[in-house]
Image (cartoon, rainbow, N blue to C red; front, side, top):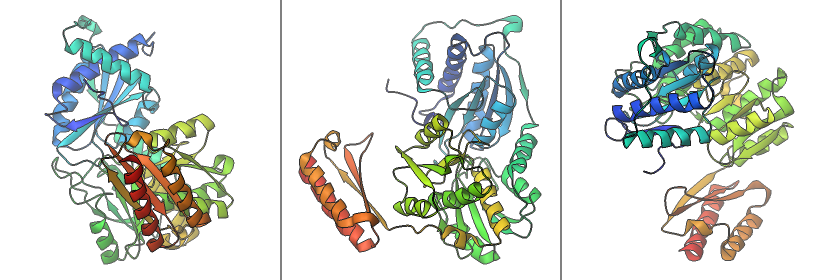
Length: 452
């Protein structure tokens, strides 16, 4: 069996790859592994379980609950809430474990299961590997040790979770949003209830789209991966700007009053300046991945701020933030982590703080985002090459060095071998799009020649 856990839990087509039997087994395995690790020592264990609105989440939630309770874990079901809400409640309620059922921005047929440790943090890779190993051994016949009588877990709905999360978000806001008209695109996802409620209570006038989840329409033409409807709605309603979430609302992208996209890099640039003013940007540093636009780095440098870059993936951003105590980090895709108030990307929180900055400054989002100029970026996938030799090929190193000399201070080259396919990704940024295309084309040819 290949490794089940990816960078964000276990995902697959629900009822085909990700079955009720699998999530039940993984839940039992998680309970056993955490018990062996001492997480439950001295008390009766509790888990928080939430999901996004996918139809498959209904039966998968039942399987998770059955698995945990059969292993002696008391379960609080919070229903349909964003991933960051489940993470927050896991910490706020002192639970030993959190479980979120979601496939984020994926299409409706997919689903996923993600386990959270005490405090609402992602499980360590070592624990995930152990859960997978224990699950696999029992899948092949090893019997479980099962509690009986009063030892089995009890299950109850925790309906207070919605209000508790909304109150938490409002408590983070530095100022109200009165006078702002905002369009919210909820992707027919997990934030369809929470996000409009919290923006209303914060004083904003809101228009909602993609806010009628029926279990089948999540991410279908709406949300952060389909910004067309949001752009149109912002212009149509004369709104100050728009905010888009994905299916589990751990990311946020925005659209200015003219319908132009504001990506995660620009959002972080705006938030960084506000956090510095409030004394919240520790070490005047932001953490982002190597795929962030060079314009982001140049903008931070002009403002006297520092950028620390990590490998691609919000998990690596979070690891860097936790290790060094940084307060703000994220990805161009809109995963923004504000570590003082969230243990994961929180799209609703990000949108609220972005709106608060607009309201506080009286400046349009377009003008605020103008602190950063996005440099043209060209990405070419080069297939059918030996990706393992990217760092050892002398010919390729020479081609990269030549490209970097040509681009100078206002450009950047990045070669990334795929982790799953025999291809190499060539990314070039330059002040001019034609130069970026030209350099990227030559480098793609060099990759084919050197590694083909």
